[in-house]
Image 1: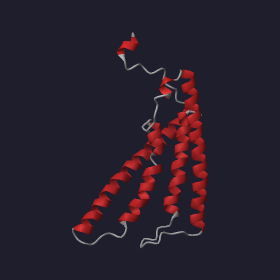
Image 2: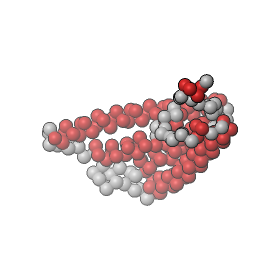
Image 3: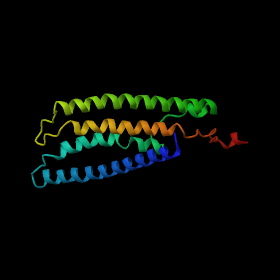
Length: 171
């Protein structure tokens, strides 16, 4: 993979991470608005719950590539940190390839689900009647970019042996 492509993937992931921050801010504002309308003015909104439910899907998948890029995901590295460098490199490559494979399956299946929702004009049975293809399309987009982020992560070097936290072992 070229350096320019890796940089483009990195910028795309950063942009989607920023979009996730904006969506989270929008959700806070609209939920607070709905609470005030519901309990102060006794006039709840008809759209807030539905819109924010779909935005949770957005938050679950769209910023995922940025979390991977920033190495901000949760992981248990107790055993992996104790492996020799060659084994950690192999584990890193394997985890990236498994991530790419998982994302490929998710893009494929969620893409089919989105196309089916478009084909049959599936809609929410609410007052908004939101087409189901709108939230569904977030899945192949998010997992597609996450798969690209795993691909770019393959190029990243694995850190050498971590320094011991015990100062007596550093002697």
